[in-house]
Every structure is written in structure tokens, then in C-alpha cells.
Image (tube, rainbow, N blue to C red; front, top):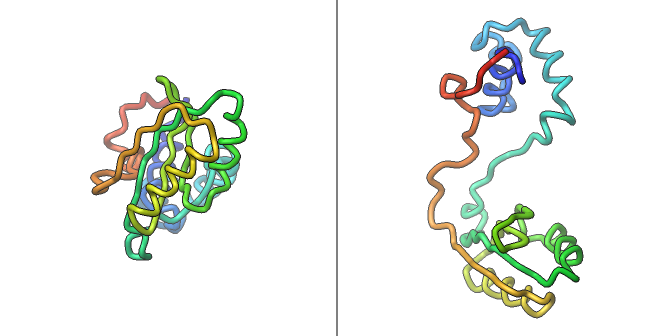
Length: 155
């Protein structure tokens, strides 16, 4: 279980991972040196990656799609490697409830997305596919961004 200080720091980083230690200290009341030490300890364990959220449509990628995929179990590992390395696949997850993978794909247009789904069928023994196009982001990457809303018991 994380201490209250840890949750405060993580909440600040979830809001803006590029925030200065000085501002995080002002918001949380935690000394800068403690924040620095905590963040250093989090690296590689608790904090997996610092990244930037991009509006892909402004780069000409107007089709975002979530694909649930079930493949023949004999080629599951091969399919996993293919999905991990495909340039249009933003995220891939191993899932349950009758499917093997949940894929988030980013494409220039719907035709490119459909061609990708069709190519999966030709490349692998696909047993089942469900495709969902993302129309609008309603909420994204906001878990733990507001410390006051966390329902976590602190130690």
C-alpha cells in the first residue's frame, strides 16, 4: 500500500509529468528533496514510461479503431509478435472472455483500418473479430489525476 505522500506525488505526475519539482512541492507540501528521491525510486518499477498524448487526427490519422481478435491457439505467439511490431498498432492487450487480443489501431482512414483487419484474416487463422471505431474521446488517461477523488486508503 502506498503512503499518502506517494499518492500525492503520483497524482501530480499523472496530471503533468513535466511539472517542476518546485511546483509539485507547492501543490503537495512535500519537500523538493523528498519528491526527487521518491521519483527516482519509482523509475522503472512504478513509473513505466513518460509519454506525450497526441491528437492523431491533427497528423492526418483520422481513424482510431479497437479490435478484439481471437486466433487459433497454435499461432497466438506469432500473432502477438506481429501486433507488437506493426506500425499502426498503438496498444495491444491480452484479454479474456473468448478473445485473445484487444488492439488499438491508428489509421489515416477507415479503408486503411479495414484493410488491416482483412490482412489479419489472411495472415493468421482468425476465429473471431469484433471491430469498434472510436468516434470521440470522452475521458482519457485521467485515473489518479485528482488526488481528492482517489478512493484509496493511505497508510
